[in-house]
Image (cartoon, rainbow, N blue to C red):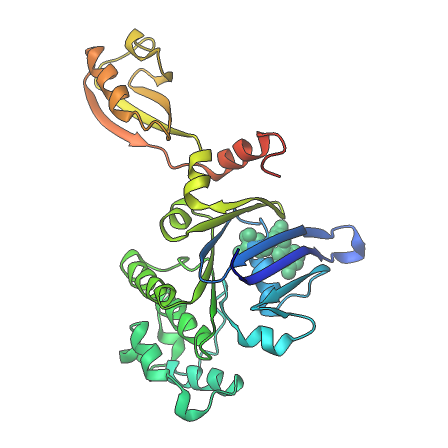
Length: 314
Ligand code: ADP
Ligand code: MG
């Protein structure tokens, strides 16, 4: 076992409501270890507790119980050291609209006590493709540009751990790719990267390890490949030009249902990935396929699958 970049033990958060009646238990006492050097995904639907976890690490939210350490430094006992070893890109785009990107990075570097000679303002602006906006008012930047500027801001003190909370919110596809290229580069150079997302595809594509969080609990935490094997089924929706009254015999060997006369839904196991066999069966039945769609794996389905495998997932 290698060392952990982040260790979380029994972390609990209650957001106090008025009079205690509407207290919100956002984290139920989670344990989480994030290995050094990993590209780690914290995956879960909206409201699961991802930002709460991140914001506790960032020192923006006070925990109710439990402990957390960053790069070996307990956030209570050594808050400055803990803070120095992590760079966090928050989910909310918080901005001082009157600073230019260059000023913003300089101010941030000053706050972290980075000496002038060691500052990397130009390099960082270039890396996030904002050099041409270096002296523009931040309020004139698009959502995607702001997100990238916040990535640069999180990196001014050269932390070994970079955390991105829902990094693709409001970032268009092309720039998203640039952002990922840069994050991958940082990871290749040794930075531990943690990202939260509610898109399985995103976590699947980028992360080597994924923890799933739901209703303030960590449902599972394992290498991406292993997790995907457990997410068993995928649905293939086939549109046919023929009007069907029932599922053709040739398809009865599969878990299939007739949605309406022109749409067949077939559940296939991802492990077998036998889409070819399904399509062959459809053609054998003499049907003409006009469209095929595979449904995105629904996170809710995954939770159900994971939590129903008795004991194993808990
Ligand atoms: P996620 O980032 O996974 O979408 P959050 O950590 O933001 O989830 O929220 C977890 C739960 O805590 C949600 O039910 C949310 O409504 C609640 N919550 C988050 N922030 C606050 C707050 N400041 N006050 C009260 N409840 C909050
Ligand atoms: Mg969030």
